[in-house]
Length: 492
Image 1 (cartoon, rainbow, N blue to C red):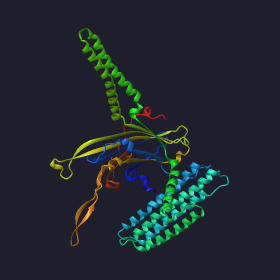
Image 2: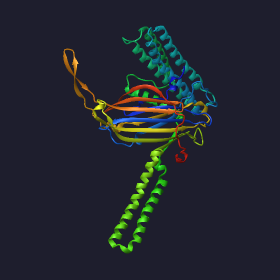
Image 3: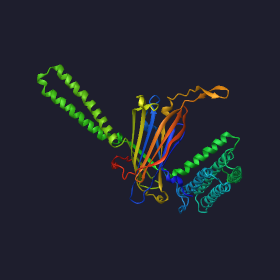
Image 4: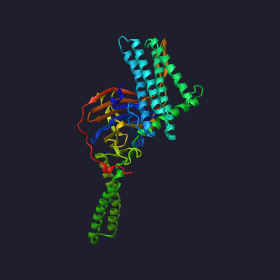
């Protein structure tokens, strides 16, 4: 099954109630070549709800390698990290199968003359492939060996529990799909009933297998047990994906160049102070005592002020011309001793107040006041050097921006609105919603993609994210401007 998701270089979604998330994939180069990418994000807030805040405090960046190919053989001799990588390959296969279920149903629903037997065949094939993938993973990764050390035996048990949870998630999606198919406007119920029977059989068999192995089982009558079951699944996911994450290092430009900027400011202050002192000395014979004291006080005051103004001016120019922050992503030391830098990036963020024509009547001269937040990252990606470098093809970067400061100023009161009703008029409570336009552009030497969406907010958080336009390619740029900033990267 082809990995359709591999062709999508960016995605926008709500991570939780207050954080909007966008993610991109960058191919990892082979050999001495370099992959380049540029990410630009723009948010537009109504001025009346905007709360000034430090954007860097609200931005979170995570980077990990893409899950290995499920067809890649497990490394020998098998290590704990190698076992985790192989398990992620099987989990990736199950995820692709899980995502293909609603796509298969949608494809058949768009057919002017849908064939129920064909749909049943496709869905049965997906379920068979999922069960086969889990069985193969158990035979190659879970089955114990006589030479296994204790930590490897424990990891094999975790692999089984992790992959079992992935299958349960797939079967849950399949069951939800059955429910939609059985709706009055759904596809023929015969197909859904057959699929539901197959799903029920696989679920029962897998739950029995989990019970036999002593793994945690969900209990529908105990909410606390259900919460613990979900928490256990989240812990397993983090445990296995930890092997893919790179180690980030960030440093603000003004901090990286603090000594040089301070030295330049001190030099400027010295010139100002020395010039005024020389003027005071040369004119001492013709000036009174109070005049000399005034000149001395001005010289002393301007010295510190000139130092601070020079420091701020230089820091501002560096941030504007180069970047606000530098980011380095390194391979973990346990994979590559020298902690090779996989990605170097320059990041900039700016907030501005703008005036736009009122969209209700642009030609009337009325205006709308907005606050824009723009973030840009320009990155260079180099090849991996660790022993497992050949197992990975792409680098996934996840950005999360927390809108919590904005939520505090939103109105949560509902207003009664008269609406037509049979036989008269009734009143409905209308919630207060706010819309924040979002524009995301990702550029690579192969081309560019642009996505536009609207974040719908209420006082409780992100209500939904509505795509404004489908993905459309932009002209390719042969090369991105990128100065060599190795000297400014963190060295910790």
